[in-house]
Image 1 (cartoon, rainbow, N blue to C red):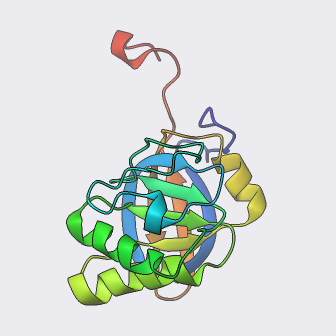
Image 2 (cartoon, one colour; image 1 turned 135 degrees about the horizontal axis):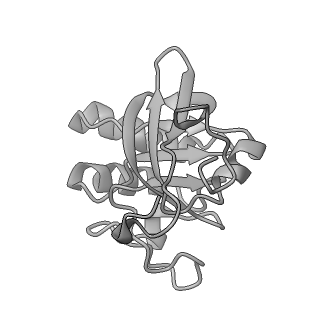
Image 3 (cartoon, rainbow, N blue to C red; image 1 turned 180 degrees about the vertical axis):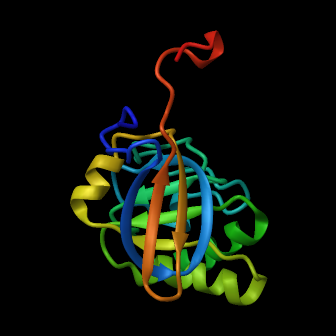
Length: 167
């Protein structure tokens, strides 16, 4: 058990499977968004911070994070904002969705085509996303193949206080 609701394999990391919307590999701490987010108007293009004052994760940084959300909200301009955040290094390392989202996929595809930077976008089942939603802050590794197969891995998180060396 990873300690956050996702079962680990014996002696290995917890694994979930999904469908590739945009291929690539990425890893980072998991940021769970509890409401949809618009990249245009809801995030700062230059810093990757959530600036929508009404969003529950206001002030959170997307930079280098594995983002879990149902879908985006808002304008088709969000694609260009996401692509620019990826180019500038302040975008997410990977995006996990529970609903197909053409705006998010287009932003990631544009960044791959224009800037050569791939950010995987993966479609997860609602049950797996719900379990993963309990894992905010855990490091997640995402791999999304061009063949449509995708996976999310969570290394087994240590119990206790890591600073004290507790097991």
